[in-house]
Length: 255
Ligand SMILES: NC(=O)c1ccc[n+]([C@@H]2O[C@H](COP(=O)([O-])OP(=O)(O)OC[C@H]3O[C@@H](n4cnc5c(N)ncnc54)[C@H](OP(=O)(O)O)[C@@H]3O)[C@@H](O)[C@H]2O)c1
Figure 1 (cartoon, rainbow, N blue to C red):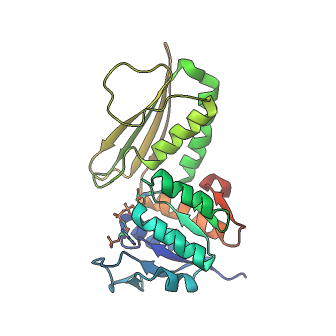
Figure 2: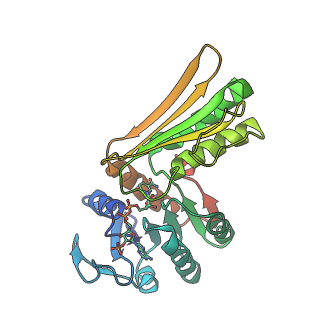
């Protein structure tokens, strides 16, 4: 039997971090070896799932095969540097990254394996493929609206998943205007891709892509019922990426 894949978890005290810690319990072939938080975090030094929260990424990577990141964009750059130094793969589920950080991930993919997925659910990986096909077939006569709903604590909007869906459809259709904000005053540009956002309660994550033509509408929806869905996707990604060559990967590459 091969040795389990060991991973260090950045953002371990957060909502997603805790879901990953829960999901790994009782799993064969994968093991969490470090619970990392922000320097100065209220969790520092406390114990979770038998591990003490620490903040030394380099030290954690010395005993891990992969770094899994569910922190926030400001620490993802630091996580990436640590992975490059240690020549270890990075799996990041962080959203709200700016273009500079995305470019750094792409650059790092030339030296180490990097898997970045704004949504770690398999259903969304499939939805990304489905919306591409729908956008291509339905063409410019259909307006596209990406609606998403998340819990009241989510910081970025539109969600990383909504942006990834829009980008996939824009690529599939050629040059399509993507309306980046959610302020929708004025008439709609024909064939454009817009966003609608809800932030409320404890909604885990819902995405609907509406294709609205004349006289007909097509809607494709995904609803995550619990964070365990994303956590299991991240474990799948961590298992998959260990030992892979350098590259910038997506969750759908693991399907
Ligand atoms: N890809 C997906 O499927 C998916 C699904 C859900 C959420 N997300 C994304 O995952 C990220 C985390 O979401 P969440 O809801 O778990 O957020 P959260 O509850 O706010 O947790 C954020 C975590 O990051 C840590 N952190 C913040 N700054 C840090 C730093 N500079 N260095 C190290 N750790 C730092 C926090 O530690 P302390 O507060 O203890 O300091 C906390 O553990 C967000 O970007 C979210 O959009 C992705």
